[in-house]
Image 1 (cartoon, rainbow, N blue to C red):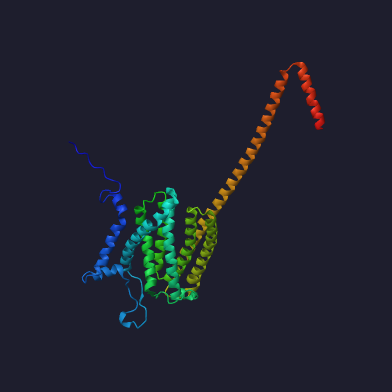
Image 2: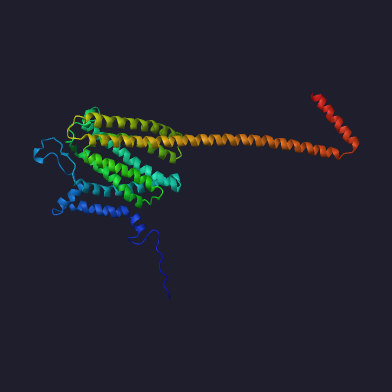
Length: 378
């Protein structure tokens, strides 16, 4: 008796296969993260585990802290360990949002595969942007940056950060870093990868540069402005996928205005900080100031250029479709007239043929009747 090999079910792929890792990546990553959390419970491993979980590089010595004073932090190499740990947390949170929120909404909307990918992207980014805007806005208010522009460059480069301030940037770096493995975990198509890799890399590099070079206050304001505009965009995009065209059109109109205002506000803040605010600061060189300003302005111009190119292409496409529709309508009208003319000519020739087949007396009678009818009509 020959025993046939058992076919592996698609629901239970082989262990350590690509499908197994993709289906269970949240559980695998959460187990890795739990190793660091459990390490805090033991005295021997607590110092090592705390490097990955807690914030380090205190700017205020513990013995100098007074009652009610908040501890401040600076940047350092240990932040890389924190970024790694919170990248793992980001992968787990991403999977939870995907499974318990976005997947349930998708099943109700009955989207195509192309729209499902865009829906997942907008859903994840929308949640992140909303949290970042609320969190960043709270930090801006607490740091006194809302109505005091000079605070953006005051005390540079000795800019100490509070716990929530520093944690905000650690989470920002971790989130954009976790986007790379998510390309594999979410089975993103190859044609969609370049765009996602590009914007994730831009976010990661610019935020990391601002964090390392102590431009955190300016970066915080620019991120909150940018994330606020992007929140409206992804809300409009999700409404479009949910078949709410009228509401989506209004939301896109609001985003169009916010996008331009955000670009201009970002350029104004950058020029005020790099060109005027830090002009008398001897601790920063002219090259660094101009380079920082050039990077920010270049990004704003790049986004404006893409924005204008997109809208101009849409306008050209709309005008082309309108011209095509008008030409098709004109052609259909001409075809209709030609068809009527052909039908009238065919009817006339049929009548003449029928008359020619009659005897000569009937032909003369029919001809006289038609002449009388024509005279009466005149």
